[in-house]
Image (tube, rainbow, N blue to C red; front, side, top):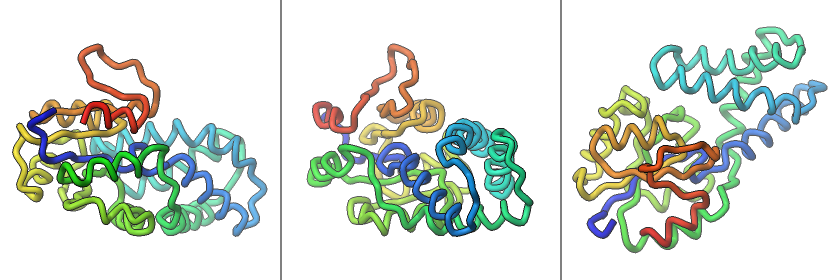
Amino acid sequence: MKHITDIFFDLDHTLWDFDKNSEITYSIIFNKLDLAIDISEFLVAYKQINLDLWKLFRNELIDKDTLRYKRLHDTFKAINITVTDAVIYTIADDYVYHLSQQTHLLEGALVLLDYLKPKYKLHIITNGFAEVQVGKLKNTNLDTYFDVVINSEMAGVKKPNPIIFEKALQMANASKESSLMIGDSYEANVLGALNYGIKAICYNYHNEKLPNHIHHVNHLEDLIQIL
């Protein structure tokens, strides 16, 4: 890693604690709407449904509005709760607003960034919705760490499409040889980066079984020993 000058991070499930922040957000919304829903039961179903729909979304098989609707509709159906479409759309809109206000980061994120900032140029490549991701970075002060932030709506494609990596490197004025991608998704972040021709490390947030040749860490602070 001695030739690395630019490090590109994913945001959700890599630095920003999506699961905790999402739980807080749905608790706020359900209380506001006076919905008697067991948040734990809801989240158990929601987590996998949301991951599956995001995979379809990044592969261009569904659009943004379908994702926002179906992750709620399918979760309520899975836990046998009847909710009108009007309520679903209200929750979906409120979720976008309240989610970006939450500020919990994953353990070790700030320690890692404080260590890396003096040594490297740091950037973000995210598939998340632009209006939400900007708020997340600003409200956590993470925006102070990063030189370039590119999202899939800016790029017109989503990771693992090589175009988003190409545009990110162009914006950062970085070369493939001097760049490194770090993220939680093996498919979107790691394979996407490797197939484009840049190095990658998987932050194995999801405790997946990864191929032996894939560089990975189980804790963010483990990256300090590598970088």
